[in-house]
Image (cartoon, rainbow, N blue to C red; front, side):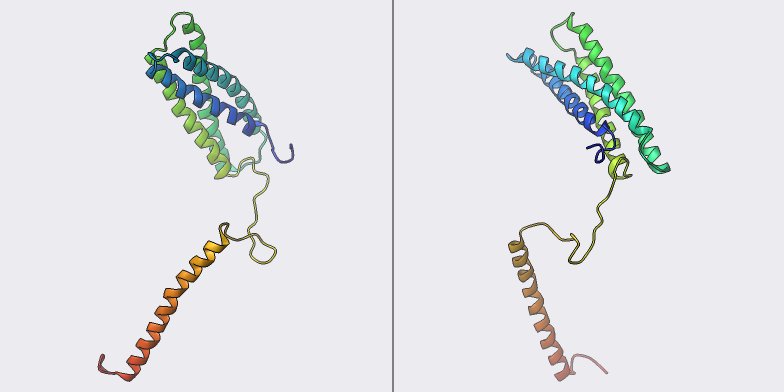
Length: 202
């Protein structure tokens, strides 16, 4: 496992993104459905996802910092990695602040205030940007990737299209039929041109 995955950051980041995304979504639903019979259940689900997500955000930041100082990189990938780090620190700070704010406000009011909902929507936007920057660092710059597949042609290679072989064969046949008809028409036209010189001037 440790030979395949160079660090733990990719593991924790998925828990962070999923739980904080659910928290953001259900806090919006909590505000929209504040008169619904299951309002308190939705609110509780949102709260727990925010608290769990904030906890995983700390673990993600720690493992991300270790990855930042250990993965092999060049100048362009270092800039991408630094940009992702900066967005991540800002996002984590806001979500943890909201989690602490929620603990404080929970004693004062049972309903979610509009200011809290707007703040968590903004935080979710930052989370989306952070996730995009992280994916870009991996898939565009290859950070943390131990090997890349080599595409080879030939009997020993694996370069081919995946799909239904029968439907692809039928498609190839249907495409070859008009080509054969066009070739026959071209041959007929060439034969007519050799026999009839009235269509052009010498």
